[in-house]
Image (cartoon, rainbow, N blue to C red; front, top):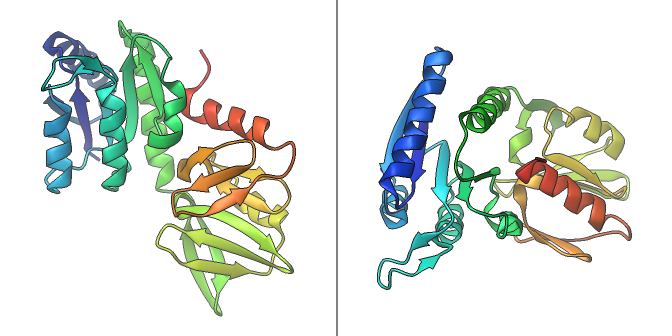
Length: 250
């Protein structure tokens, strides 16, 4: 499988350095097949995605880039990522940054990792290892459920959240459908264990970290617009799971 990778940075030297690191990875991993596009402007990247002419699997993007009209250095990368998500892009996002100041903005743009400049080959290689493994595993993350007397294959990546109501459990999917089950939440969670993004929240919910837009001590906002009210004591551990999932630990 050819992996489409976008590099977006206003500094050509940084683009070249990242491209060389990716080339070195390909040489050491013959199974890796990268198609790399360079962008010195976030607007150009956004335009190609908006037009439907480009759909990268992975985007390396600088957080701070000059605003095109004023030249002022602003967190343009964060805003570009928001627009990409609004367009429906599911690309993995690796941010270039000089600090972790904007780490919590991952709640809105679903960033996978922050890379502190200057980039090191070792760190990028480790991230690519994980990304390619995850890409391969995503093809295998399915469960089989009985839906209206039919055995149906459900992609774990398409689950937004699961909710227990009375004797039934309801699974809410990306396409807007709702799947009703008569199992237990424990059994559903066991079936979903292959997907690291699906985590338990109290006894009544299983939520996908991939589909959380924002959270506070009282509620989650999911990307289908649904609000989930958090049981007492669940916010802090959930926040840690979220940050571990997206930012990792140095």
